[in-house]
Length: 317
Ligand code: CUA
Image (cartoon, rainbow, N blue to C red; front, top):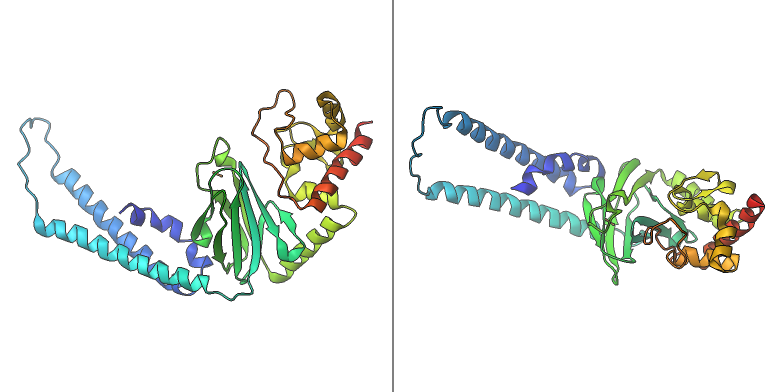
């Protein structure tokens, strides 16, 4: 009954987030779990107190044989409960999959150790946070670049693996505005525990504004800076023009020097380092830490390279 005993804490947020059938079934599941927990705890505590050995009692306990009636009961009751919960969940999931076809589509890319969200219906803008309009049916298409990852926002009530070589899907319709933790739940390497982001459920107007601003940034004069910010570069790298001071990865103000050390033209060096971070690893930094950004649309990649090489040059000279 591990599924039932661990359920209540995980289920409470679902009462807020999912629609229709789950709203009816989840309080029932919580109620069952609470009753089960109370019964098991009560029997355990009673047994610990009632049947504990006295300090001077060195004798064997009485021989006990099976109890057919009890065994049938403790097998049949959980079997019925779990089957009922499975059927209710299957119905809810099937209904969920049948949501209207005009879904918002978001491409989710998982890699060691970062999430990227791309919005093909909004000018291919990318984000390191999952932004969603409330009450809109949304389809997530999940891909993994390297190893298996698993997408989980506990409040959405569903989990889906991202598996290299195939595209998996998840359909959700968020019903409550807010910010929810987004977690990788497949042990995917050293940085697994850090592979976290946020799912931000927004009012439709706020979402439209965010998408329009992001799109304008992607195609406008600040495209490079937008790409830098949207892809979380500043989370690891210092780069004065962007105002970032992180020290996880090499300082990008010294890009020109690093390119010289690698014996590469600055622009090629920069592009290669974004698409294939292990091509030239700066001295003192481990390999396999920076995720690849080969999935970036070419226009954004070009803008990012331009931003890093041109504003950076000015900054360092
Ligand atoms: Cu990705 Cu754990």
